[in-house]
Image (cartoon, rainbow, N blue to C red; front, side, top):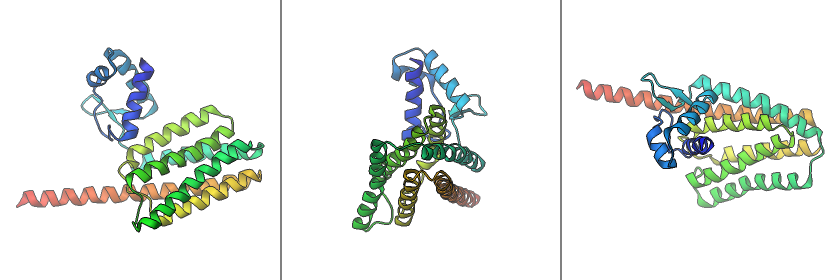
Length: 239
């Protein structure tokens, strides 16, 4: 039951039902699970240790609010682990089934690009971003699985989940962003297929760093918007 509670909280965070700063209610979650509060408390304790939840000043447990430095830290961790994993994967012989799956995941980005061009819109819709996220996560996760290190996969998945707490608020990818990601994924796969470990690692490092810059730009934009909104409210109250 503890694992059910753990997965339920994770799911609510990943879907945006529990946003950053949201209070975790042991009572509500235990009622939803049809259990006592104990498994919820135990699951929350594990998520606290993993950094997905944090203690609030008032003493409650809330969904972690990522700071700018927190985002940097997560991307640095992700880069270190994934770059190591892709180098290891590139030194192994790729199974035809893995290559076929990676190709199909990359192709999903191309399909989204075509849909965006056909629609005439500037960025992906929420549903299209969901599809992109699934294929993007699948691409990176499969590369790590090919390195045959389940612990790295667990840590990277956890960091990506934490980053999604913030990314839920971001707008959809634009055409130039999708084109860049498509090309980078294509180049990374080519390097792995050719067993060029050094090039695969360099390309993946550049890819993750570009993603980090986008995420930080989004964070900075969000912070500026909040600051301007606060100033407007203060000015309104002053009059």
